[in-house]
Length: 392
Image (cartoon, rainbow, N blue to C red; front, side, top):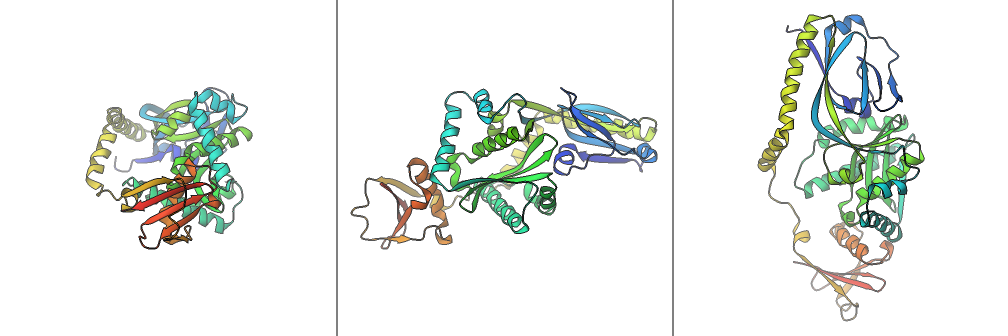
């Protein structure tokens, strides 16, 4: 039995991110309608079919999977949830919002969009089918920097950094082939929110999102989802798939929560394949049971308790005062205007963004002054609004 071959496949990644569908699959469609997403044009080699067993994980349960006639399959619930926005019934993004959000929740999102667009030099760009290499490298480097800062702030790690080289090397061609895209929110020429997304038929898959943490108050994740759903509806997409992983923002936006299955696929007529499939199915059953008891979450939390180092929050962030001022009078004698957008003063960006969020001030009108006698004191000025920041 030592020569048994089991091909282990992450179906979600294979279908969306790699678009390399396992050879044993003949058709993929939706369970609730007749729409066909994929049909194999190749007949599988019978000799290969006799020798192979497939362990296929993370299969969305809203899909109907048909296998080549050489195979049988067993299906097991995986106890993992996915989140999606089904868009067939909606003619515009506002009708989706009205259906999905109640009262002030939608109002807050619209208000933040207006704040962002009126107080910054905001633009939204989807790179789909065409992108210059220099642009691509700049966006990928910006996204990596955003992810790094977010996880450093949370004092956490993420698997994305382990597979980053693979994503970097494949995504450029995928964008040109319209299998993937970037959605980018800019302030001027600087990205402040970036999403890597994949395209499969009429499904848009949100894959790797991140944002500039300095703009956190504006709820860029919500604004990005709003704009992505708007694009989907305008371009005839029936689903915006937010993927697996339980996050509050996904629960808020999703009108469809779905499950995932394990599929074990094996040759009908080969005893070795049947044996290996039964063994693999037993292993999957144990995995599914442990997942149903949240064993994976408990193990992760246990590991995190040992692997996380001491809190890394910068003292500039932790020990400071913010004081609203009625005027600049009496302060300007010792304060000198600085080029606050230079790298030297990068730590001030969060405070400037917060200042703009709470006051009707335009980003390009903000001036910052530093005390020449006590250099840890700064004053933010925008029209008739003033704020002093004192670092300790």
